[in-house]
Every structure is written in structure tokens, then in C-alpha cells.
Image (cartoon, rainbow, N blue to C red; front, side):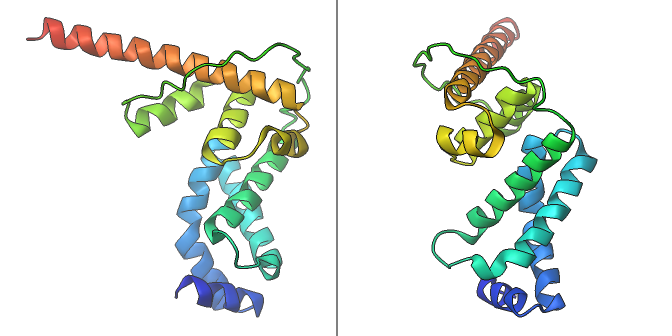
Length: 183
């Protein structure tokens, strides 16, 4: 079933269309959930909630922009809701520091390695990094969705980038030493 048929079928409440939606898009959307929720079971719960929300609100999809992007936003909101339930945002404090402009040093490291590094970030930094860099949210949108002040969001992003850059540079140095001493 193609995307248009899935959307129209879901709008009409057809179970077959919803099954096709899940079959076709669940793996992609689960990957989104896993970027926010380290626990696989929580990610699957958020995915399920997100899929139900998608089905219930598919009539609001205007057809402008990417259907996958529209669904991703719904799933991200489900993940954020799950994080709130887990009281992850309870201990957030406002950080009022100046953001320093730094280059993004994600370089040539493998995508799988980057994902592992991102998952090692402190939770708030990981969420902000994913929302800003991966999902394309603005800092104002991040504030609206998470209640993390825009200035704090910028600081968390800067810290996440700095930490990732340091880890990547250390990894590259280790690789250079390995090559040097094994040839």
C-alpha cells in the first residue's frame, strides 16, 4: 500500500490501512523513539502511543511537507510525554550561561558509533541534541515542548557538541595510534 492509500485509508478508519501504516513506518519511528528513550520497552510504549495519536489525527495532515516528518513530531511528543511521566524533567534547573560558538566535529566517525556516543550524553543534553540536530526543532520549539528555557537549550546543545567532539577526537587519536603501532 502506498503512502497516499495509507493516509486515505486511515482517514476513513480502515484497520487494513492502520496495519499498513504500522508495518511500513514503525521501524523508522522506533529508531526516533530510541534516540530519546534508552530503555527499549519505554521506546516501544512511546511508539505505540505515537501510532495511536497518528491514527487519530491523520485527518489533520495537510499533505504539505513530509508525512514521515509529521509522524516523527508526534512520536517525539509521545517520547517527551513518557519522559515527563518518568519525571526526568523534574530536576532541571535554568542555566543562564553564554553559549560559545563551536564547530560541529562529527567528522568521519561511523553513524553507529555516533549513535552510541549520543546515547552516552546526559539525558537532557541527549534530548536537546536529538531535537535540534536530528529532528530539526528550533530552540523556541524545544522550550515549548520540554519547558527547558531557550537559553538553557542552547547551553545543553553546546555542551553536548563539545562532549561529542572531545570523544570523537579521542577516538580518532586512538585509531591513529593503533594504525601507527600495528604497521
